[in-house]
Image 1: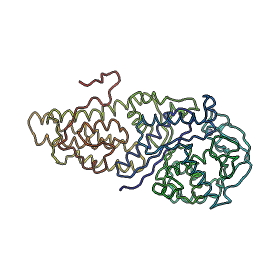
Image 2: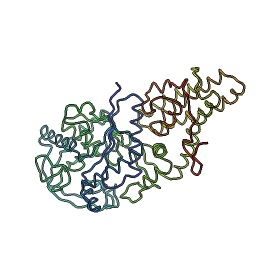
Image 3: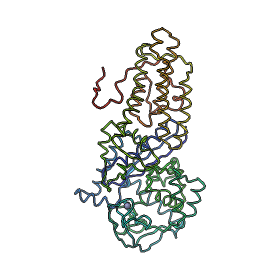
Image 4: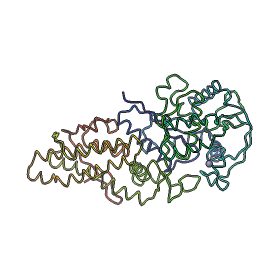
Length: 509
Ligand SMILES: [Zn+2]
């Protein structure tokens, strides 16, 4: 049994189609989940939908359907996109599910039981952003608008709400972040969160008055649980909380979120858990945003690039790869079609695709399609071992784009090795021992590259894995398969072009 690794993504509001920005987060988390499985971890990967937002009522009304019918439709739309993008999530949670409602109620009851003074009634007035579904503080407002939603108007709102005494948790949360028992990564986000905590915390409203769409506030049927307080608990609901068995998965090992919601995940969520006496998640990773020509990509900013168009351009694997390589999982990055096409051609078609078809074709042509069983260690094997080590170091730290770089360094070295050893000459001069050693090393290397690449481009990796004559699937392979690929003696098959270039005939000859 490997280590338990419970991984989550932010759950998305059910108020519109997903865009390329949502996709970055999901494929990044999926890349981590697949890498962790390769490493041998017992991965549990959760995705889902945040369905109690006020904006759902408005969107449903505009579409002329009930909120329930609307969220059902949205959940299907999102799930379909994530399936197309090959997300390998183990669970899919929706905040309208009974298991979640039970968990939210239980957590609130537990907080009131343990810390009766930490939930109290008070009057609240403020400016509410319907994009964020929260009251905004001065520091979150620029030019009279929410920083995250400059095109939406803030709504002045006053009501009597239940409050959570967030201010009491400043020091405990700050201590844990500083001590690293609650890791907030990357460092730039940790520093932002620490600054917020040092400035002090205000108590927060955690209920809404007479809002029919939401989870009833325990003991006060006039109120529903504030959508963010409700949504954060999804990570715990999916473990079966409050059942004792939830400890099989909890605490979460890694929450993946966007940089715009670190206050919720790194401050409010840990405070809620501390109040309830539940263990804190181990790490929160906050990624940057996808920008389109320098502008934040979100529906409300009106610059959406259709996710459908982006997937159809070069297929789902290419989009996954481009997002993780060009945009990365740390800072903001720019999405342009030019860069997408350039990376597709140079790194996927001419890089990995070309190497794979070359190696498989040479094995077909020079040794009758069966990988020689020679185990002689070549300079290429040495390079592979070095790159695998580097890859693991980066991937363990969620540095996906550097993990991909290590893989492409190995691809470049393998292409160079083909040139150096010139198997076509060895075949001509009938240098069988040398030819066997070279081709078996190339087959091993191709299998290794394919496993290193699988978290990024699972679909194409599986095609190559299968062409190498290897059993099971690349997704089911584990670390020993990477260290000692069992390619010797396998019968290979030819590849049709993995990454056809636009305008070329993709029918195989
Ligand atoms: Zn907002």
